[in-house]
Image (cartoon, rainbow, N blue to C red):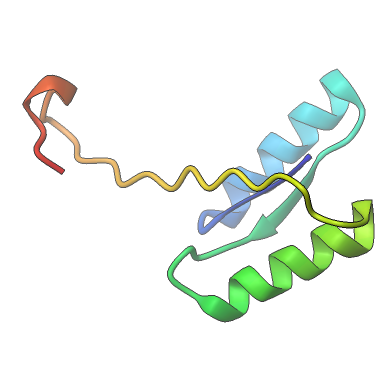
Length: 73
């Protein structure tokens, strides 16, 4: 598994937890608004695992203090 985020310290901590529980994970710094970050992430994925067949982009913007059912974006 390869995952990315803009919060490197937290992402690296999650990587350690996943590796301890399941054996393999790779965190990469990734700003989903950056084409260069995407290229780097995909290049790493291909170099690590081979051809890319599935990509899940689950970018989230968290809006605090607004219940989910009341959000419009």
